[in-house]
Image (tube, rainbow, N blue to C red; front, side, top):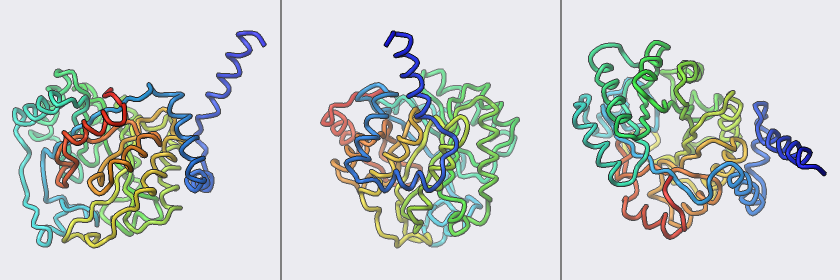
Length: 331
């Protein structure tokens, strides 16, 4: 076989890894594979498209906390549950304070800085202008700037792009079928519309979901199916394990079983080969071994820092120790 023929075969194999016509049943079949086979397949695809043994550290800061009008049943920032959770409303942080925290995160090894505001929809005006300044400042530091601000329109997405925004986070959370059981104040289509605005602006998409809310494995497969069938696929997919917060309707749910998280990481990697799969909320309940398995299954980013918006996260020293123990290096 000639060199040209070999390249043609390899290119065809590469193309077969990328699809935008997944069915939920196909995704579920991958998810439910024998664990050793699932890990082998995920690791094979991961090594094919990503630099070996690297993990990105992303830091997340709540720049405006609480009093969100949405009724997401997992979220302590919802105004609907504020009396029970005791979470106090805090105004948008000053630009200088946010940039100071971004510098601290960079010095600690983070290469992406994510800023989250508890809004249903971004409103034009002084606050959004300040978010633009935050994005510009983080970008000037040489970090990837990411924001999650709720729903945005096309003009706002374009402004964020002009400011240097690298990524916009807007999670689908779960399947369309289970969605109404956790959120009633925003439709699934509105989430997809926001992602469309982000894509048209040229900003990359960060969108994933949460497991452990009472959904079925079919719901999990449906969520990954929808994400994988976006064309192009999201550049970043965070997978979160529910962190039950007392006072929210989901405050008494049992923790996610570790292997369930591993299976989600592997399935996301197989269905979205080039996507950066992020091991996100809920890591505090997982052992070091579980987290290493998640990285082996195709995760190549973790949220890094002692807080994820308002919930606790792993200690940064422990994370660096974990990365070293696993023989990984930061990207």
